[in-house]
Length: 253
Image (cartoon, rainbow, N blue to C red; front, side):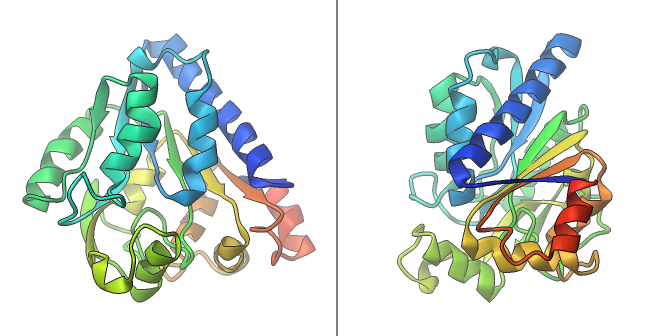
């Protein structure tokens, strides 16, 4: 794992998008298709905007998979991750091959249909973030590090629920669904390359927990340290609690 630290979220997003674009274009050159996993949330906004502007990517040769989604939330809701992906990537760049999780019906059936496509071939690159509680996708602590299931149904903890309200997706905690469909930790780790985008001071405690503590289900994103193809993008705000020794070690891989 390698970390890169930038002055602000704009420069972070531009650099992460450049690496993402290179990974996508490389896969297209090699196999005429790039298979990607895309995260959502406020931390990904600038990154996805920069990636969508990259005219070098032939999006007709990209197959996109959904990282997670709330159970019971319609696609018309402002917090729906399907809505987020449609507006910020799918419709914007014209992706025609995409697999989204519909949590409004039977979540088991939603998992089954997407999982079959997901496991049909390797994933070239996964875009992820880190939650304020250290979660990876919606794998809140203590996360399941062992399951081989591609997607699992999870219960959101209080810290995760508060983050969704704090980011402005819901008016109060009573509106936030308590269940979600999440890509499993092991499925995320199966991607050839992982690009983790983590800006903002509100993520600083989670960054410290995941990169200075032990690799543990109590700090779910700490597992990224075991994946040699992971690059973590931080800004000076999200990295502000890391010790000089940790910064040196992260930068050294």
